[in-house]
Length: 137
Image (tube, rainbow, N blue to C red; front, side, top):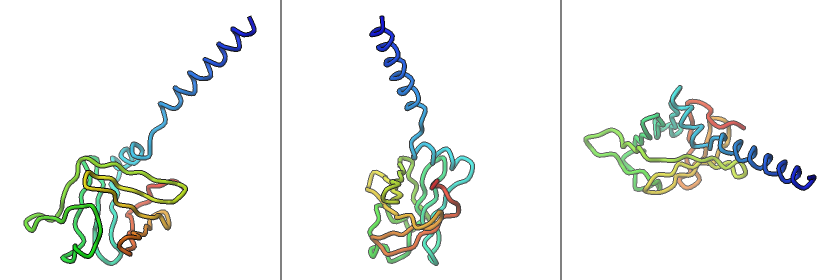
């Protein structure tokens, strides 16, 4: 009888743990819920708007006419259009390395978080700022 009670207790605990795990949202899911209230915009320091995250997708505005000098996965905007839209993207944040990553089909863009609204693009030596904090420390 004790074995049966012990076994049932273990199975109950296992089931409760599995249910709790399913309720937890990933960083990507939490981020996309948060932008429904207020979009996140990333700008190059002293250089203008770079990326905007909206519920409908990600918008890349381009860096400038010297795009070949930068290593980023986003496509340069067409001459007749001021931006490029991406509907399919994911974001992640690694708390150990403080890396915020944006993944699109063309590649991955990594930014190191320096503060709640300040990021560093190591690959291109650029400071990136955000219009609001979106990573809980």
